[in-house]
Length: 249
Image (cartoon, rainbow, N blue to C red; front, side, top):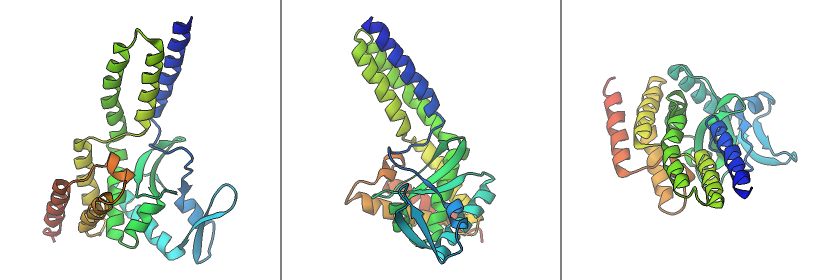
């Protein structure tokens, strides 16, 4: 009887896993704000982000949010891909792309915003990179890559139902914290940087973004680097691409 109950638990978890194919890599408790929707609700010189209790979480100059949305719109137009830009809380720089509630989203946290400040060329590189992950459907491919390894673990321990439940739970949890392959990162680096350039931004902005992230990673944990691993080789490749694009002028 215990074995049957365990198998039912595994089935429910695997159903949840299938739904995770369409979910973003969110952290429990985060509730991303739709940037454009909030921007349009006020004509004041400041744009405020409130929590559920109505307390102000962050305040930005309206002109700053307008410029970020301008970058966003230009990248969407060049990439021919539409999604929703959202902000969320966070003490270490992070950004991700995914699907939630039937909409495609790109989420940037407040720590990443502080890192980028007014370097809108870097903003273009970041937003282009995340849209590329969506357009190229990298999350689904990354999840498919991770599933088989976990299934093998589960089969090895199938004689112990309690362990099987633990493995299935681990499978579902890990699917939501998805790491992209080097191939996915190269593809998104290339597409995002090219789109940024075509939208009128300096492609070296992408290089500055990764240099800043790498610097922060030396002194603390940067969630963005877990799913978007950076390296000296990557910075060099981005630099070479940026120079090649700029030489076309």
